[in-house]
Image 1 (cartoon, rainbow, N blue to C red):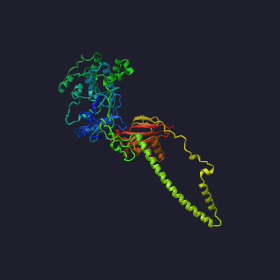
Image 2 (cartoon, helix red, strand yellow):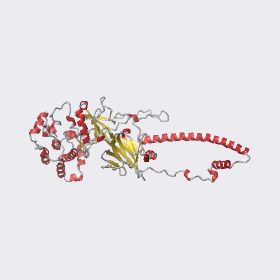
Image 3 (tube, rainbow, N blue to C red):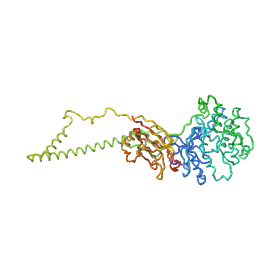
Image 4 (cartoon, rainbow, N blue to C red):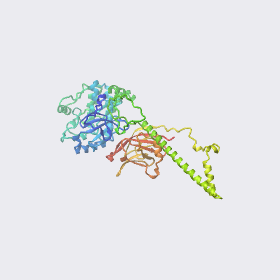
Length: 555
């Protein structure tokens, strides 16, 4: 997956590119790799993601899909500061695909090609970051198998390791035979080149080669035919004499022929921190990376959903005769933003209220006319009778009192009819983006923080009937109106929900999609909006929901 730092990496979609992958609208093509094509997209909250779509010849292989499914399940568990997290995937899709967080920065390959070998401090920061990423990957039970400079991206705050967890799935291709070596020849370990057993130490060897490339500007074992490079890796000792002297002891331990003699990722991190000295404790890495990563990347904006576009009415709206400038990135008409949607809803509500009021006035006039006729008939009947009944007298008295205007009754107006001098302001909204829910954690709504147990207010669960959000404490109601729910929308919607009937403790996720909005009310009075960014329920055992949450605390 190649997330380069130059803006030209964002290539326009071609006629054979899909505009949509599993609900993700594609904004640009990022490149292609051994498994398929890579595209730029965004979550519903606007966060950039890289979508990798598997090649058809791989997708048609049942063995590939089985391995891909297992590796996706393992990769979901990787949570590291120096990894590009896998956030969504479908091994059974047509075609299979996966989505990772997009890293706005060049690969190590591109950075070295642009500026040449990296200085020693940058190589130390690089090795420490990649080693920490390997710790997270290995803790999830994964061996990367294809760590190399093009799979290390240089963000402004440090390196990111990508494509972990899918190299094993790539093992099964129409070109693979039993005993064949899988990986990139120049960065393989000896046991990998000879089709031996792969362990976490295999990735350490690849890290040593990657660091040597960063320091030298070329592969440590040279170039040439793959068979020649692999022969040198298996049979020759690496020549470390061209490397900076400060790096030679560590790289020698990374590149030991015997996997048992190689340094561990944890030892590697500590070694680098000792050599960096005070810079490591002072957090000097970002300054190094800003220089190496180059100019900040401008990521193309999300592609709007065409179904959310609108057409201006023909009456009452000024029409400009000056053509609007065309954007550099072609896209459908922009949809209404949340504030515009709320303004439109208020305008429609005012029109509807005015219409109702007019109808009420007309109905009142008709009723008044009918009452006059009835009162006239009652007066005629009272005059024809010599002795009116007590009931008729009481009705006449009540009618007279009801017909007396307030101005004639001393000018007093009931307090309930007085308008309020001030309209209470809604509470301040507090955003909590990127909330993750799966079958092993829960969400504490009052603290707006995930819990590592199932005792929180909102939980994700999957049963025979399907996956759902559930709560034992809070009321949840799915919003079916226009997107862009406000505090007032949620407050009014929740006011009509009766949680005691048990109908608002569960939200079936089959009724939701990316962009769905759920209003939630905590017993404390806090109101929250739960906006689904990503929903993955195709495989319940590894299902999850990622959402952006906004909380309006009770005053």
